[in-house]
Image 1 (cartoon, rainbow, N blue to C red):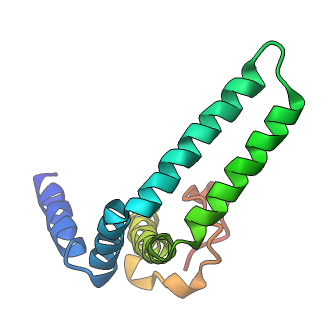
Image 2: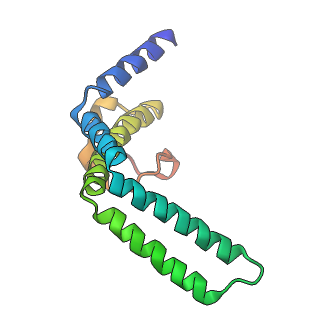
Length: 138
């Protein structure tokens, strides 16, 4: 088992050298440094909390709920149009795809399949990771 843990640590080190990881980290740091984006996120979180509190109130005002819901959606749209957030979303998707591929190789190996037969292009993206109802990965 110690050998497997060492190999996992090595995989982790290699993962941190991968361009998809590095791109994701850069995009994350750019988001953190974007003051306008951080202000929008803070506004979004506050409005979402206001909306939740209003909805949970014993006698909530439907007009206020509706107005807050519209404000939440508008702020969310502003966040998602931010160039740094757009770059972050793309980088995150690429990195998650890499992690998903790694996890699939481990899952098919644990299920007794040949990891060398793993073909990342064969997946539709709907795999749950639970192979019990699957017709096969490879």
